[in-house]
Amino acid sequence: MRKAFAMLLMVVMLLTACTATPLESAQVESAAVVELASASSATVLLESSQSAEEALAENTSPHGAETDETYDLSEAVAITLNGDSISSDGSGVVVDGSTATITSAGTYSLSGSLTDGQIIVNTKAEALVRLVLNGADLRSTTSSPLYLEKAEEVIIILADGTENFIADGADYTFANAEENEPNAALFSKADLTIAGNGSLTVAGNYNDGIASKDGLLIAGGTITVSAVDDGIRGKDYLVVEGGSLSVEAQGDGLKADNAEDATKGYIDISGGAITVNAGGNALQAETDVIVTGGILSLTAGGGSGSYADADTSMKGIGVGANINIDGGAFTINAADDALNANGNIVINGGTFALATGDDGMHANTSLEINGGSIEISESYEGLESALITLNAGDIWVNANDDGINVAGGVDGSGMGMRPGGGQPGQDMFGAASANGYYLYIHGGTILVDAGGDGLDVNGAIEMTGGVVLVNGPTNDGNGALDYDAGFNLTGGFFAAAGSAGMAQAPGTNSSQNSVAIFFNGTQPGSTLVSIQNSAGEDLLTFVPTKQFQSLVFSSPDLASGQTYTILLDGSEYASFTADSVVTTLGTGGMGGGMRGGPGGGSRRP
Image 1: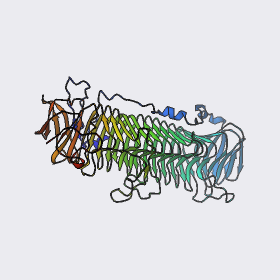
Image 2: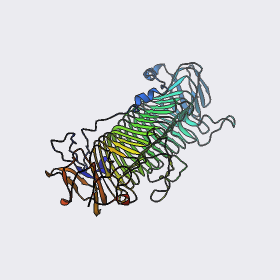
Image 3: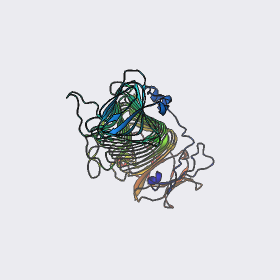
Image 4: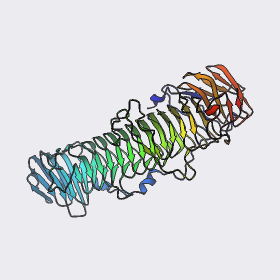
């Protein structure tokens, strides 16, 4: 997963035994796993952190019990599909030609093929209806071939080793013009569970593939769905606990769309293997998406290079409220944002390989990362929110524009800026916190490769620990570091190489020293930059991936009153004494000085 970034930069930090808060030795090289850490970057979780379990507790509990899957096939009522007719001699089933209606709770076994007909569940009892698909092929040209019209709860069990099929036609015939239900190949008005170890293939040729107007729980099975609109939809919630799901949908892939109750309309994934190729959003929830496990491969809108319709949402995961992720493995390729929340995003764990035509992760209100491994190999902007808190985790960002962007209001940067034209619509942001817009860095490893600003904060930055490495930009209209209201740096390791015209350094109110170096000319990418102390020990060995004319560096090892030497490709370039919180060499930045808030210091020729 990390090979895309293996050649981005090479960093070696060699440490002395006397360092009070030592940084562990680290290196990025071809096919290597990045392990950058700071002893001073212990995870600092804010009170606003929320685990997936806590997020689930705020939502309606799903239906279903493990005992629902237990049955005795010998006691099941057999329903046999005979092409253009149906036969059953058990109680609780009314057969009328090619239509069978189940009127009582109980267990029913369906087998055979139905060329053009319908199975209906319509019971009055408040008990479970169990449908065992035992090699069943259900088809209808005018309606939903499996219509769960009324029941307390229905579970569909895919019998071990069986292959089952459900397909509807492209045109439905309704009883009157005011009706529009059922409207999916498998349609339920009751809480629905799908389980078992068999397979089910569903073709939704009219509208959706599988749809429940209540809750939908998938506990097992190999399920393949194609749909002209949404693939799998549970109105109140869609819960995936296991199984293998493959969805091809022209609309959204997996969806929960109850907009009337804040405790419903959510997607909860705790296991299973999920592959989605959607014309719209791969996962779309009216409220929350909560993930604690599973393997998810999501493609939206044809992928990161395919965006054409600004009126269609084409996100990997799109939610009306919050995203909470504690685990799972994500591979997302989206025309729009890979992850987008109208509220908050909290990442506590998991692995992410993201490619997107817009943002890697966008949250209107706040984005918090407390762990996990995140690689954003392609994006317009990498991480974006009104408030970003990075407490832990390994983060790789490759962005055409800003690597990390803290902003407010309406973001116009996503309009028509993609190479070749066509760009997702504007992103919205929530209101600033009481203190304004902030980027907090308390720990973790953050590697940024940016075409625009590396860190762009329309507010302030506070850094207490962790490792931050920035490559780019190369143009003087942007800076590797760009903030408006101060940068208070008290711990951690920071190195940013980029252009000189808009360069900034951490603020002079910081308690950890920094140096800002403006080189005499532009240095080519792959130039080895070293900073050594008077004993010849390396504080930094950095190989920027792009051409650069400025370098900002901060480390706990950069001690006041000590003299250091800068080397380029092993040859001495200059030396300096750290005689202030921010020591400056050369001339650069806006107006020839350091740009932005407090960030000056002594300037040396």
